[in-house]
Image 1: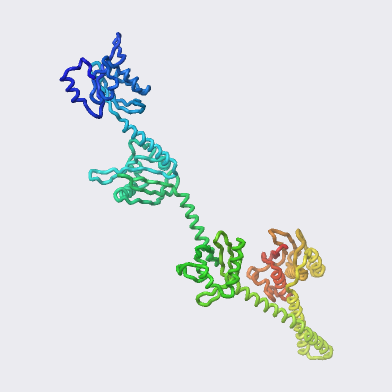
Image 2: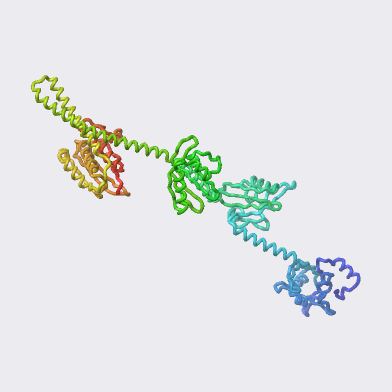
Length: 617
Protein backbone atom coordinates (compact mmCIF):
# COMPACT_ATOMS: atom_id res chain seq x y z
CA UNK A 1 0.00 0.00 0.00
CA UNK A 2 1.40 3.38 -1.07
CA UNK A 3 0.23 6.60 0.47
CA UNK A 4 -1.54 8.90 -1.95
CA UNK A 5 1.18 11.60 -1.63
CA UNK A 6 3.62 9.17 -3.28
CA UNK A 7 1.21 7.59 -5.68
CA UNK A 8 2.66 8.29 -9.12
CA UNK A 9 4.01 5.75 -11.58
CA UNK A 10 7.62 6.93 -11.76
CA UNK A 11 8.12 7.14 -8.01
CA UNK A 12 6.52 3.79 -7.39
CA UNK A 13 8.61 2.07 -10.03
CA UNK A 14 11.81 3.59 -8.68
CA UNK A 15 11.03 2.60 -5.10
CA UNK A 16 10.07 -0.92 -6.11
CA UNK A 17 13.33 -1.37 -7.99
CA UNK A 18 15.40 0.06 -5.16
CA UNK A 19 13.78 -1.59 -2.21
CA UNK A 20 12.17 -4.81 -3.41
CA UNK A 21 14.03 -7.73 -1.80
CA UNK A 22 12.94 -11.20 -0.75
CA UNK A 23 15.03 -10.80 2.45
CA UNK A 24 14.08 -7.37 3.73
CA UNK A 25 10.69 -5.81 4.54
CA UNK A 26 11.29 -2.16 3.62
CA UNK A 27 8.71 0.50 4.44
CA UNK A 28 8.30 4.26 4.86
CA UNK A 29 6.59 5.80 7.88
CA UNK A 30 5.40 9.36 8.36
CA UNK A 31 5.20 10.98 11.76
CA UNK A 32 1.74 11.81 13.15
CA UNK A 33 1.89 14.94 15.34
CA UNK A 34 -0.52 16.49 17.77
CA UNK A 35 -1.48 20.18 18.08
CA UNK A 36 1.78 20.80 19.98
CA UNK A 37 3.76 19.22 17.15
CA UNK A 38 4.72 16.24 19.27
CA UNK A 39 5.02 12.88 17.50
CA UNK A 40 2.29 10.57 18.82
CA UNK A 41 2.36 7.83 16.18
CA UNK A 42 3.46 6.94 12.69
CA UNK A 43 1.38 6.12 9.64
CA UNK A 44 2.21 3.72 6.84
CA UNK A 45 3.27 5.41 3.56
CA UNK A 46 4.79 2.67 1.48
CA UNK A 47 6.18 -0.83 1.66
CA UNK A 48 7.98 -3.21 -0.70
CA UNK A 49 6.61 -6.60 -1.70
CA UNK A 50 7.99 -8.29 1.42
CA UNK A 51 6.41 -5.63 3.63
CA UNK A 52 3.11 -5.90 1.67
CA UNK A 53 3.06 -9.67 2.31
CA UNK A 54 3.49 -9.15 6.03
CA UNK A 55 0.80 -6.46 6.23
CA UNK A 56 -1.72 -7.95 3.77
CA UNK A 57 -4.09 -8.72 6.64
CA UNK A 58 -4.10 -5.05 7.68
CA UNK A 59 -5.04 -3.36 4.36
CA UNK A 60 -7.38 -0.50 4.99
CA UNK A 61 -8.94 2.26 2.95
CA UNK A 62 -8.07 4.63 5.71
CA UNK A 63 -4.83 5.56 7.31
CA UNK A 64 -2.85 2.60 8.79
CA UNK A 65 -1.12 3.49 12.06
CA UNK A 66 1.96 1.70 13.39
CA UNK A 67 0.53 1.55 16.92
CA UNK A 68 -2.29 -0.62 15.54
CA UNK A 69 0.09 -2.93 13.72
CA UNK A 70 2.31 -3.35 16.80
CA UNK A 71 -0.66 -4.11 18.95
CA UNK A 72 -1.84 -6.71 16.47
CA UNK A 73 1.50 -8.52 16.12
CA UNK A 74 2.19 -8.55 19.90
CA UNK A 75 5.63 -6.93 20.13
CA UNK A 76 7.53 -7.56 23.34
CA UNK A 77 6.51 -4.88 25.85
CA UNK A 78 10.15 -4.21 26.76
CA UNK A 79 10.89 -3.23 23.14
CA UNK A 80 9.77 0.28 21.97
CA UNK A 81 9.88 0.61 18.15
CA UNK A 82 7.81 3.82 18.21
CA UNK A 83 10.37 5.42 20.51
CA UNK A 84 13.17 4.33 18.14
CA UNK A 85 11.32 5.85 15.14
CA UNK A 86 10.65 9.07 17.08
CA UNK A 87 14.32 9.34 18.12
CA UNK A 88 15.53 8.95 14.52
CA UNK A 89 12.92 11.43 13.19
CA UNK A 90 13.90 14.07 15.74
CA UNK A 91 17.69 13.56 15.85
CA UNK A 92 18.32 12.36 12.34
CA UNK A 93 20.71 9.70 13.73
CA UNK A 94 20.23 6.24 12.24
CA UNK A 95 19.66 3.24 14.55
CA UNK A 96 19.92 -0.52 14.29
CA UNK A 97 17.75 -2.50 16.69
CA UNK A 98 16.56 -6.08 17.26
CA UNK A 99 13.13 -7.06 18.55
CA UNK A 100 10.78 -10.01 18.78
CA UNK A 101 7.27 -10.41 17.40
CA UNK A 102 4.70 -13.09 18.23
CA UNK A 103 2.96 -13.82 14.94
CA UNK A 104 0.46 -16.65 14.49
CA UNK A 105 1.53 -18.04 17.85
CA UNK A 106 5.22 -18.15 16.89
CA UNK A 107 8.05 -15.89 18.00
CA UNK A 108 10.08 -14.20 15.31
CA UNK A 109 13.22 -12.10 15.52
CA UNK A 110 13.74 -8.98 13.40
CA UNK A 111 16.70 -6.68 12.96
CA UNK A 112 15.64 -3.14 11.90
CA UNK A 113 17.84 -0.47 10.30
CA UNK A 114 16.10 2.89 10.82
CA UNK A 115 17.04 6.09 8.91
CA UNK A 116 15.34 9.50 8.72
CA UNK A 117 13.15 10.27 5.67
CA UNK A 118 11.55 13.71 5.55
CA UNK A 119 9.23 13.89 8.57
CA UNK A 120 9.42 10.17 9.16
CA UNK A 121 11.66 7.16 8.76
CA UNK A 122 12.71 4.53 6.27
CA UNK A 123 12.82 1.10 7.93
CA UNK A 124 14.56 -2.01 6.55
CA UNK A 125 13.45 -5.02 8.65
CA UNK A 126 15.27 -8.37 8.31
CA UNK A 127 13.86 -11.64 9.61
CA UNK A 128 16.73 -13.09 11.68
CA UNK A 129 14.71 -15.77 13.47
CA UNK A 130 16.77 -18.66 12.10
CA UNK A 131 20.06 -16.92 12.84
CA UNK A 132 18.90 -15.96 16.32
CA UNK A 133 17.62 -19.46 17.03
CA UNK A 134 20.96 -20.91 15.91
CA UNK A 135 22.81 -18.30 17.93
CA UNK A 136 20.77 -19.07 21.06
CA UNK A 137 21.25 -22.81 20.56
CA UNK A 138 24.96 -22.32 20.02
CA UNK A 139 25.18 -20.14 23.10
CA UNK A 140 23.27 -22.76 25.10
CA UNK A 141 25.61 -25.49 23.89
CA UNK A 142 28.64 -23.32 24.62
CA UNK A 143 27.30 -22.64 28.12
CA UNK A 144 26.71 -26.36 28.61
CA UNK A 145 30.18 -27.17 27.25
CA UNK A 146 31.76 -24.53 29.47
CA UNK A 147 29.90 -25.97 32.46
CA UNK A 148 31.09 -29.47 31.65
CA UNK A 149 34.66 -28.28 31.16
CA UNK A 150 34.54 -26.20 34.35
CA UNK A 151 33.49 -29.28 36.30
CA UNK A 152 36.63 -31.20 35.34
CA UNK A 153 39.83 -31.20 37.40
CA UNK A 154 42.01 -30.87 34.33
CA UNK A 155 42.75 -27.52 32.76
CA UNK A 156 41.34 -27.34 29.21
CA UNK A 157 42.26 -24.71 26.65
CA UNK A 158 41.19 -24.25 23.03
CA UNK A 159 43.84 -22.75 20.71
CA UNK A 160 43.55 -21.29 17.22
CA UNK A 161 46.59 -21.23 14.97
CA UNK A 162 48.06 -17.84 14.05
CA UNK A 163 49.68 -17.92 10.61
CA UNK A 164 51.98 -15.53 8.74
CA UNK A 165 51.75 -14.41 5.11
CA UNK A 166 53.34 -17.73 4.05
CA UNK A 167 50.63 -19.63 5.91
CA UNK A 168 53.18 -20.84 8.47
CA UNK A 169 52.04 -21.20 12.09
CA UNK A 170 53.91 -18.64 14.19
CA UNK A 171 51.80 -18.53 17.33
CA UNK A 172 48.57 -19.70 18.92
CA UNK A 173 45.62 -17.76 20.26
CA UNK A 174 43.78 -18.81 23.43
CA UNK A 175 40.09 -18.75 22.47
CA UNK A 176 38.57 -20.64 25.39
CA UNK A 177 39.68 -21.70 28.88
CA UNK A 178 37.89 -23.66 31.56
CA UNK A 179 37.95 -22.73 35.25
CA UNK A 180 40.78 -25.15 36.15
CA UNK A 181 43.04 -23.75 33.41
CA UNK A 182 42.43 -20.18 34.59
CA UNK A 183 43.28 -21.17 38.17
CA UNK A 184 46.31 -23.22 37.13
CA UNK A 185 47.86 -20.39 35.12
CA UNK A 186 46.30 -17.44 36.97
CA UNK A 187 49.45 -15.30 36.74
CA UNK A 188 49.70 -15.76 32.98
CA UNK A 189 46.02 -15.61 31.99
CA UNK A 190 44.46 -13.24 34.55
CA UNK A 191 43.56 -10.76 31.78
CA UNK A 192 42.15 -13.38 29.38
CA UNK A 193 39.11 -12.06 27.46
CA UNK A 194 37.12 -14.76 25.59
CA UNK A 195 35.97 -12.15 23.06
CA UNK A 196 39.54 -11.17 22.14
CA UNK A 197 41.59 -14.19 23.12
CA UNK A 198 45.23 -14.01 24.09
CA UNK A 199 48.40 -14.98 22.25
CA UNK A 200 50.31 -17.90 23.73
CA UNK A 201 53.62 -16.08 23.35
CA UNK A 202 52.21 -13.13 25.32
CA UNK A 203 50.85 -15.35 28.08
CA UNK A 204 54.09 -17.35 28.38
CA UNK A 205 57.04 -15.25 27.26
CA UNK A 206 59.35 -17.50 29.29
CA UNK A 207 59.08 -20.26 31.82
CA UNK A 208 57.30 -22.84 29.67
CA UNK A 209 59.60 -22.22 26.70
CA UNK A 210 56.88 -21.04 24.29
CA UNK A 211 58.93 -21.80 21.19
CA UNK A 212 59.06 -25.46 22.10
CA UNK A 213 55.34 -25.56 22.86
CA UNK A 214 54.41 -23.63 19.72
CA UNK A 215 56.41 -26.06 17.60
CA UNK A 216 54.79 -29.02 19.37
CA UNK A 217 51.30 -27.56 18.93
CA UNK A 218 52.02 -26.75 15.29
CA UNK A 219 52.98 -30.40 14.62
CA UNK A 220 49.60 -31.48 15.99
CA UNK A 221 47.73 -29.03 13.74
CA UNK A 222 49.76 -29.86 10.62
CA UNK A 223 49.95 -33.65 11.06
CA UNK A 224 46.83 -34.40 13.09
CA UNK A 225 48.93 -36.54 15.45
CA UNK A 226 48.05 -36.03 19.15
CA UNK A 227 50.75 -35.62 21.81
CA UNK A 228 51.21 -36.24 25.52
CA UNK A 229 54.13 -35.32 27.76
CA UNK A 230 55.05 -34.51 31.36
CA UNK A 231 57.27 -31.62 32.39
CA UNK A 232 58.46 -29.82 35.52
CA UNK A 233 56.82 -26.44 36.19
CA UNK A 234 58.08 -24.27 39.08
CA UNK A 235 55.56 -21.56 40.05
CA UNK A 236 54.36 -19.62 43.10
CA UNK A 237 57.06 -21.20 45.23
CA UNK A 238 55.82 -24.68 44.26
CA UNK A 239 57.47 -27.36 42.21
CA UNK A 240 54.79 -29.17 40.21
CA UNK A 241 54.81 -31.81 37.54
CA UNK A 242 52.39 -31.16 34.65
CA UNK A 243 50.89 -33.71 32.25
CA UNK A 244 49.78 -32.10 28.99
CA UNK A 245 48.00 -33.69 26.02
CA UNK A 246 46.63 -32.18 22.85
CA UNK A 247 44.46 -33.13 19.86
CA UNK A 248 43.75 -31.26 16.65
CA UNK A 249 40.54 -29.17 16.45
CA UNK A 250 39.81 -27.34 13.18
CA UNK A 251 42.81 -25.04 12.50
CA UNK A 252 43.99 -25.32 16.06
CA UNK A 253 43.95 -27.78 18.95
CA UNK A 254 42.46 -28.59 22.33
CA UNK A 255 45.03 -28.96 25.13
CA UNK A 256 44.30 -30.71 28.40
CA UNK A 257 46.61 -29.88 31.32
CA UNK A 258 46.73 -31.67 34.66
CA UNK A 259 48.90 -31.28 37.76
CA UNK A 260 50.24 -34.78 38.46
CA UNK A 261 52.70 -34.01 41.25
CA UNK A 262 50.77 -36.08 43.79
CA UNK A 263 50.20 -38.98 41.39
CA UNK A 264 53.86 -38.86 40.37
CA UNK A 265 54.95 -38.83 44.02
CA UNK A 266 52.69 -41.78 44.76
CA UNK A 267 53.98 -43.59 41.68
CA UNK A 268 57.57 -42.95 42.78
CA UNK A 269 56.69 -44.09 46.30
CA UNK A 270 55.03 -47.22 44.92
CA UNK A 271 58.05 -47.87 42.71
CA UNK A 272 60.41 -47.49 45.69
CA UNK A 273 58.17 -49.76 47.77
CA UNK A 274 58.16 -52.39 45.03
CA UNK A 275 61.93 -52.15 44.66
CA UNK A 276 62.33 -52.39 48.44
CA UNK A 277 59.95 -55.35 48.55
CA UNK A 278 61.83 -57.15 45.80
CA UNK A 279 65.17 -56.39 47.46
CA UNK A 280 63.82 -57.56 50.81
CA UNK A 281 62.55 -60.76 49.21
CA UNK A 282 65.95 -61.31 47.63
CA UNK A 283 67.77 -60.75 50.95
CA UNK A 284 65.33 -62.95 52.89
CA UNK A 285 65.16 -65.60 50.19
CA UNK A 286 61.37 -65.21 49.91
CA UNK A 287 59.31 -65.17 46.73
CA UNK A 288 55.62 -64.27 46.39
CA UNK A 289 53.05 -65.80 44.03
CA UNK A 290 49.43 -65.73 42.91
CA UNK A 291 47.86 -68.74 41.20
CA UNK A 292 44.59 -68.42 39.27
CA UNK A 293 42.73 -71.75 39.34
CA UNK A 294 40.46 -70.94 36.40
CA UNK A 295 43.29 -69.80 34.10
CA UNK A 296 45.71 -72.34 35.61
CA UNK A 297 48.58 -69.89 35.56
CA UNK A 298 50.66 -68.11 38.16
CA UNK A 299 52.29 -64.77 38.70
CA UNK A 300 55.71 -65.10 40.37
CA UNK A 301 58.03 -62.42 41.72
CA UNK A 302 61.61 -62.59 40.38
CA UNK A 303 62.93 -64.13 43.61
CA UNK A 304 60.58 -67.11 43.29
CA UNK A 305 61.99 -67.90 39.84
CA UNK A 306 65.45 -67.73 41.42
CA UNK A 307 64.43 -70.09 44.25
CA UNK A 308 62.98 -72.68 41.85
CA UNK A 309 65.85 -72.09 39.38
CA UNK A 310 63.47 -71.44 36.48
CA UNK A 311 64.16 -68.81 33.84
CA UNK A 312 61.52 -66.02 33.99
CA UNK A 313 60.85 -66.31 30.24
CA UNK A 314 60.68 -70.10 30.18
CA UNK A 315 56.90 -70.18 29.82
CA UNK A 316 53.63 -70.17 31.73
CA UNK A 317 53.85 -71.47 35.30
CA UNK A 318 50.95 -73.90 35.66
CA UNK A 319 50.20 -76.29 38.51
CA UNK A 320 51.50 -79.14 36.36
CA UNK A 321 54.81 -77.33 35.85
CA UNK A 322 55.09 -76.74 39.60
CA UNK A 323 54.32 -80.39 40.43
CA UNK A 324 57.12 -81.58 38.12
CA UNK A 325 59.55 -79.69 40.39
CA UNK A 326 58.21 -81.04 43.69
CA UNK A 327 59.88 -84.17 45.08
CA UNK A 328 57.70 -87.27 44.41
CA UNK A 329 57.53 -88.09 48.13
CA UNK A 330 56.17 -84.60 48.93
CA UNK A 331 53.59 -84.09 46.15
CA UNK A 332 50.72 -85.60 48.13
CA UNK A 333 51.55 -83.49 51.21
CA UNK A 334 51.62 -80.34 49.05
CA UNK A 335 48.30 -81.10 47.31
CA UNK A 336 46.57 -81.98 50.58
CA UNK A 337 47.63 -78.62 52.06
CA UNK A 338 46.13 -76.78 49.06
CA UNK A 339 42.89 -78.78 49.18
CA UNK A 340 42.57 -78.14 52.91
CA UNK A 341 42.85 -74.37 52.35
CA UNK A 342 40.46 -74.53 49.39
CA UNK A 343 37.81 -76.29 51.47
CA UNK A 344 38.00 -73.88 54.42
CA UNK A 345 39.45 -70.75 52.77
CA UNK A 346 41.96 -70.55 55.62
CA UNK A 347 45.75 -70.14 55.42
CA UNK A 348 47.86 -73.24 54.89
CA UNK A 349 51.49 -73.88 55.76
CA UNK A 350 53.48 -76.66 54.16
CA UNK A 351 57.11 -77.75 53.75
CA UNK A 352 58.26 -79.74 50.75
CA UNK A 353 61.32 -80.47 48.70
CA UNK A 354 61.94 -79.55 45.07
CA UNK A 355 64.29 -81.10 42.55
CA UNK A 356 66.34 -78.63 40.51
CA UNK A 357 67.45 -79.31 36.97
CA UNK A 358 70.99 -80.16 38.16
CA UNK A 359 69.65 -82.76 40.59
CA UNK A 360 70.09 -80.54 43.66
CA UNK A 361 67.42 -80.85 46.36
CA UNK A 362 66.00 -77.74 48.01
CA UNK A 363 63.74 -77.46 51.03
CA UNK A 364 60.81 -75.02 50.62
CA UNK A 365 58.56 -73.50 53.29
CA UNK A 366 55.32 -72.12 51.91
CA UNK A 367 52.33 -70.26 53.36
CA UNK A 368 49.27 -69.25 51.37
CA UNK A 369 45.51 -68.80 51.31
CA UNK A 370 42.82 -69.90 48.84
CA UNK A 371 40.21 -67.17 48.20
CA UNK A 372 37.76 -66.74 45.31
CA UNK A 373 39.51 -69.15 42.99
CA UNK A 374 43.00 -67.81 43.64
CA UNK A 375 45.86 -68.81 45.91
CA UNK A 376 48.17 -66.07 47.10
CA UNK A 377 51.18 -66.67 49.28
CA UNK A 378 54.93 -66.74 49.71
CA UNK A 379 57.62 -69.39 49.50
CA UNK A 380 60.99 -69.43 51.23
CA UNK A 381 64.13 -71.42 50.54
CA UNK A 382 64.92 -73.04 53.91
CA UNK A 383 67.57 -75.44 52.60
CA UNK A 384 70.36 -73.82 54.60
CA UNK A 385 68.18 -73.82 57.70
CA UNK A 386 67.34 -77.51 57.29
CA UNK A 387 71.01 -78.32 56.73
CA UNK A 388 71.88 -76.23 59.78
CA UNK A 389 69.19 -78.01 61.82
CA UNK A 390 70.70 -81.31 60.79
CA UNK A 391 74.17 -80.12 61.74
CA UNK A 392 72.83 -78.80 65.04
CA UNK A 393 71.22 -82.16 65.79
CA UNK A 394 74.46 -83.92 64.97
CA UNK A 395 76.36 -81.42 67.09
CA UNK A 396 73.91 -81.83 69.97
CA UNK A 397 74.33 -85.59 69.67
CA UNK A 398 78.12 -85.19 69.68
CA UNK A 399 77.93 -82.88 72.69
CA UNK A 400 75.79 -85.40 74.53
CA UNK A 401 78.27 -88.12 73.66
CA UNK A 402 81.13 -85.87 74.75
CA UNK A 403 79.40 -85.01 78.03
CA UNK A 404 78.79 -88.69 78.63
CA UNK A 405 82.41 -89.48 77.84
CA UNK A 406 83.75 -86.71 80.08
CA UNK A 407 81.41 -87.70 82.90
CA UNK A 408 82.35 -91.37 82.58
CA UNK A 409 86.05 -90.63 82.21
CA UNK A 410 86.13 -88.25 85.17
CA UNK A 411 84.37 -90.77 87.39
CA UNK A 412 86.45 -93.71 86.13
CA UNK A 413 89.68 -91.77 86.71
CA UNK A 414 88.80 -90.89 90.29
CA UNK A 415 89.65 -94.35 91.62
CA UNK A 416 93.10 -94.62 89.96
CA UNK A 417 93.93 -91.06 90.99
CA UNK A 418 92.79 -91.82 94.55
CA UNK A 419 94.98 -94.95 94.56
CA UNK A 420 97.94 -92.97 93.24
CA UNK A 421 97.41 -90.38 95.98
CA UNK A 422 97.24 -93.12 98.65
CA UNK A 423 100.34 -94.93 97.37
CA UNK A 424 102.29 -91.67 97.24
CA UNK A 425 101.21 -90.94 100.83
CA UNK A 426 102.45 -94.40 101.95
CA UNK A 427 105.71 -93.85 100.07
CA UNK A 428 106.10 -90.44 101.71
CA UNK A 429 105.69 -92.04 105.13
CA UNK A 430 108.03 -94.99 104.46
CA UNK A 431 110.91 -92.98 103.04
CA UNK A 432 111.77 -91.05 106.16
CA UNK A 433 115.38 -90.66 105.21
CA UNK A 434 115.70 -89.67 101.55
CA UNK A 435 117.87 -87.53 99.39
CA UNK A 436 116.80 -83.98 98.56
CA UNK A 437 116.05 -84.78 94.94
CA UNK A 438 113.68 -87.62 95.99
CA UNK A 439 111.94 -85.14 98.32
CA UNK A 440 111.49 -82.76 95.35
CA UNK A 441 110.05 -85.54 93.17
CA UNK A 442 107.53 -86.53 95.84
CA UNK A 443 106.35 -82.93 96.32
CA UNK A 444 105.93 -82.48 92.52
CA UNK A 445 103.98 -85.70 92.33
CA UNK A 446 101.73 -84.59 95.19
CA UNK A 447 101.02 -81.27 93.43
CA UNK A 448 100.34 -82.96 90.09
CA UNK A 449 97.92 -85.42 91.71
CA UNK A 450 96.17 -82.51 93.50
CA UNK A 451 95.85 -80.64 90.16
CA UNK A 452 94.52 -83.76 88.48
CA UNK A 453 91.93 -84.25 91.22
CA UNK A 454 90.86 -80.59 90.87
CA UNK A 455 90.57 -80.91 87.09
CA UNK A 456 88.45 -84.05 87.44
CA UNK A 457 86.23 -82.17 89.89
CA UNK A 458 85.82 -79.30 87.40
CA UNK A 459 84.99 -81.70 84.58
CA UNK A 460 82.39 -83.36 86.78
CA UNK A 461 80.83 -79.94 87.42
CA UNK A 462 80.62 -79.32 83.66
CA UNK A 463 78.85 -82.61 83.00
CA UNK A 464 76.44 -82.01 85.85
CA UNK A 465 75.11 -78.88 84.04
CA UNK A 466 72.88 -80.53 81.44
CA UNK A 467 69.26 -80.03 80.26
CA UNK A 468 66.85 -80.60 83.12
CA UNK A 469 63.20 -80.01 83.88
CA UNK A 470 62.56 -76.37 84.77
CA UNK A 471 60.99 -75.39 88.07
CA UNK A 472 59.85 -72.17 89.69
CA UNK A 473 62.71 -71.07 91.93
CA UNK A 474 63.03 -68.12 94.25
CA UNK A 475 66.20 -66.28 93.29
CA UNK A 476 66.38 -64.52 96.67
CA UNK A 477 66.58 -67.89 98.41
CA UNK A 478 69.27 -69.08 95.99
CA UNK A 479 71.35 -65.93 96.70
CA UNK A 480 71.01 -66.50 100.46
CA UNK A 481 72.16 -70.14 100.11
CA UNK A 482 75.18 -69.17 98.01
CA UNK A 483 76.11 -66.34 100.40
CA UNK A 484 76.06 -68.82 103.28
CA UNK A 485 78.33 -71.20 101.35
CA UNK A 486 80.74 -68.36 100.50
CA UNK A 487 80.49 -66.70 103.91
CA UNK A 488 84.18 -67.16 104.74
CA UNK A 489 85.40 -65.72 101.41
CA UNK A 490 82.89 -62.82 101.56
CA UNK A 491 83.90 -61.98 105.12
CA UNK A 492 87.61 -62.19 104.29
CA UNK A 493 87.07 -59.77 101.37
CA UNK A 494 84.99 -57.42 103.55
CA UNK A 495 82.39 -57.45 100.75
CA UNK A 496 78.92 -55.94 100.89
CA UNK A 497 76.27 -57.79 98.87
CA UNK A 498 73.17 -55.73 98.01
CA UNK A 499 70.13 -57.61 96.69
CA UNK A 500 67.15 -55.93 95.02
CA UNK A 501 64.53 -58.36 93.77
CA UNK A 502 61.58 -56.74 92.02
CA UNK A 503 60.65 -60.13 90.57
CA UNK A 504 62.42 -62.91 92.52
CA UNK A 505 60.87 -65.88 90.71
CA UNK A 506 62.17 -67.47 87.51
CA UNK A 507 61.62 -70.76 85.68
CA UNK A 508 64.94 -72.60 85.61
CA UNK A 509 66.36 -75.85 87.06
CA UNK A 510 67.40 -75.18 90.65
CA UNK A 511 70.85 -76.66 90.06
CA UNK A 512 71.35 -74.18 87.17
CA UNK A 513 70.22 -71.18 89.23
CA UNK A 514 72.58 -72.10 92.05
CA UNK A 515 75.53 -72.60 89.66
CA UNK A 516 74.84 -69.21 88.03
CA UNK A 517 74.72 -67.27 91.31
CA UNK A 518 77.65 -69.17 92.87
CA UNK A 519 80.03 -68.55 89.97
CA UNK A 520 79.00 -64.89 89.64
CA UNK A 521 79.58 -64.19 93.37
CA UNK A 522 82.79 -66.20 93.68
CA UNK A 523 84.15 -64.56 90.53
CA UNK A 524 83.41 -61.07 91.94
CA UNK A 525 85.19 -61.98 95.23
CA UNK A 526 88.25 -63.41 93.42
CA UNK A 527 88.70 -60.43 91.11
CA UNK A 528 88.14 -57.70 93.71
CA UNK A 529 90.29 -54.59 93.97
CA UNK A 530 92.34 -54.25 97.15
CA UNK A 531 92.20 -50.45 96.83
CA UNK A 532 88.53 -50.22 97.93
CA UNK A 533 85.89 -52.24 99.80
CA UNK A 534 84.12 -54.71 97.52
CA UNK A 535 80.46 -53.93 96.74
CA UNK A 536 78.33 -56.44 94.84
CA UNK A 537 74.83 -55.51 93.59
CA UNK A 538 72.35 -58.16 92.43
CA UNK A 539 69.06 -57.06 90.88
CA UNK A 540 66.19 -58.88 89.17
CA UNK A 541 63.22 -57.33 87.34
CA UNK A 542 60.79 -58.05 84.53
CA UNK A 543 60.47 -55.97 81.35
CA UNK A 544 58.92 -56.49 77.88
CA UNK A 545 58.27 -60.18 78.50
CA UNK A 546 61.86 -60.89 79.59
CA UNK A 547 63.46 -61.45 82.99
CA UNK A 548 66.53 -59.28 83.62
CA UNK A 549 69.21 -60.18 86.20
CA UNK A 550 72.26 -57.97 86.74
CA UNK A 551 75.44 -58.75 88.71
CA UNK A 552 77.57 -55.64 89.30
CA UNK A 553 80.83 -55.19 91.21
CA UNK A 554 83.49 -52.50 91.69
CA UNK A 555 86.37 -54.89 91.19
CA UNK A 556 89.38 -55.01 88.86
CA UNK A 557 87.32 -54.96 85.68
CA UNK A 558 88.19 -56.69 82.39
CA UNK A 559 90.42 -55.43 79.60
CA UNK A 560 88.49 -54.76 76.37
CA UNK A 561 90.58 -57.23 74.36
CA UNK A 562 89.71 -60.02 76.84
CA UNK A 563 85.93 -59.55 76.79
CA UNK A 564 85.30 -61.96 73.84
CA UNK A 565 87.24 -64.71 75.68
CA UNK A 566 85.56 -64.46 79.10
CA UNK A 567 83.32 -67.50 78.62
CA UNK A 568 85.94 -69.83 77.13
CA UNK A 569 86.69 -72.91 79.24
CA UNK A 570 89.99 -72.92 81.19
CA UNK A 571 90.67 -69.33 80.06
CA UNK A 572 92.39 -67.26 82.77
CA UNK A 573 93.50 -63.62 82.46
CA UNK A 574 95.11 -62.94 85.87
CA UNK A 575 97.66 -65.57 87.01
CA UNK A 576 97.83 -63.92 90.45
CA UNK A 577 94.21 -64.89 91.17
CA UNK A 578 93.46 -68.48 92.13
CA UNK A 579 91.17 -70.36 89.74
CA UNK A 580 91.02 -72.76 86.82
CA UNK A 581 88.96 -70.72 84.34
CA UNK A 582 85.81 -72.81 84.44
CA UNK A 583 83.34 -70.64 86.41
CA UNK A 584 82.30 -68.26 83.59
CA UNK A 585 82.13 -71.18 81.16
CA UNK A 586 79.56 -72.77 83.48
CA UNK A 587 77.63 -69.47 83.62
CA UNK A 588 77.40 -69.36 79.81
CA UNK A 589 76.38 -73.01 79.68
CA UNK A 590 73.54 -72.42 82.13
CA UNK A 591 72.31 -69.41 80.16
CA UNK A 592 72.44 -71.24 76.80
CA UNK A 593 70.56 -74.26 78.16
CA UNK A 594 67.76 -71.97 79.36
CA UNK A 595 67.34 -69.88 76.17
CA UNK A 596 68.90 -66.81 77.73
CA UNK A 597 71.62 -64.40 76.72
CA UNK A 598 74.33 -62.44 78.47
CA UNK A 599 76.50 -59.45 77.74
CA UNK A 600 79.17 -57.61 79.69
CA UNK A 601 79.85 -53.95 80.51
CA UNK A 602 83.29 -53.50 82.08
CA UNK A 603 85.88 -50.82 82.64
CA UNK A 604 89.36 -51.76 83.82
CA UNK A 605 90.10 -50.76 87.45
CA UNK A 606 86.46 -49.59 87.86
CA UNK A 607 84.22 -52.64 87.83
CA UNK A 608 82.05 -55.02 85.81
CA UNK A 609 78.33 -55.59 85.20
CA UNK A 610 76.95 -58.84 83.77
CA UNK A 611 73.49 -58.50 82.17
CA UNK A 612 71.57 -61.79 82.04
CA UNK A 613 68.23 -62.14 80.22
CA UNK A 614 65.82 -65.09 80.40
CA UNK A 615 62.37 -65.60 78.88
CA UNK A 616 59.69 -64.78 81.45
CA UNK A 617 57.22 -67.67 81.61
